Length: 161
Image 1 (cartoon, rainbow, N blue to C red):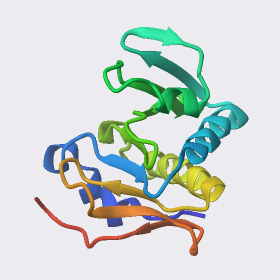
Image 2: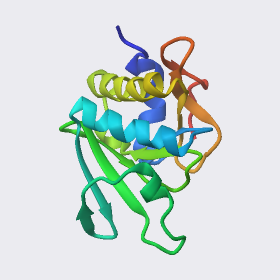
Image 3: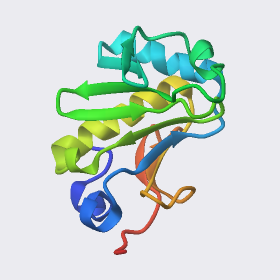
């Protein structure tokens, strides 16, 4: 089953018009939610790489990452739900699971389906919405996983910037 149709959302996935790095987030999260996401990555067998600065390290527990000193390097976790789609989790705050995707990797219905499936896996596991804001337009999601609908839905009317 397709969550959203490419023709209905392609304007939001045009990197030339919308910027190439939208923010994807789970608001009202916790350290426990971060750990659930880390466990999900392992459970699903998604390829991943954790690093701090330029140093690749084993994936730590969420509590350890989120309790690092304020002046420490910002860690990231690169997750590939498929070989050609990358999500980069940033660990910026314990109250919001946040990650970036590159719209250039999400062109066409097949890639959109992968992205929606990824959002759905996270949202179902957490029981929370997973929202995508356009680059530079934080707080105004255009699409996201809706827990009650149990699928990704369009949250804004298509637009041109």
